[in-house]
Length: 251
Image (cartoon, one colour):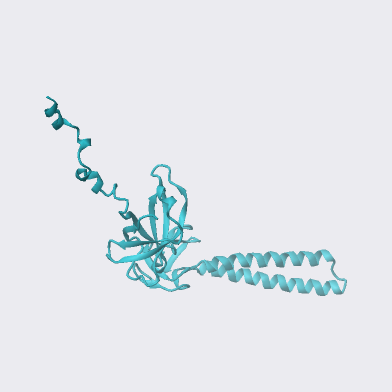
């Protein structure tokens, strides 16, 4: 009976070489750490209209490149220009009235009150002219940086209200790698360390530097945002590409 009991020993007494857990990635402390990430551009924006009006020109379509300060959207500004010209004429008239009152005051023909009124009228006219000048400048939307049009939100000859999104633009030369990594990595992950990132679309591994870490840990997923800097010679990449980041084992 004792001899047969030897064959009923539980698996825990099996030889260590036969334990499959020792060959799994979780048990292998030298296995690289992997996280998924996406490429995002530092310079990207959705440009909106600052006034109500009719669009007369949109020179760049989806996928076209533009330079900084290029006109991306132009509005019909005939009404605003007319108001600006009227305001400038009012400034000239107020300035002449002030000069005339100053001459009369030198001859004691008018009092200080009339001169003060003329000065106030000139200041008011100048302020109104500045308002119309600002509105006229808003008739053109210029590129804040060099980049590419992602999407047109509106089309030429459409009338839009203030605040309407017009164009989505991006600069693919300012790409960064954004990852969500486990918060437990904070013990060894430092700014300035390196990891390898391979975009699914290109299959080319890139050496990336950890630029900065997020300001807080997500309570639900226990993950932290990591932002990495691509090498200067990286090419053929577009915002939105996703891929895998591989970190060497922790020291």
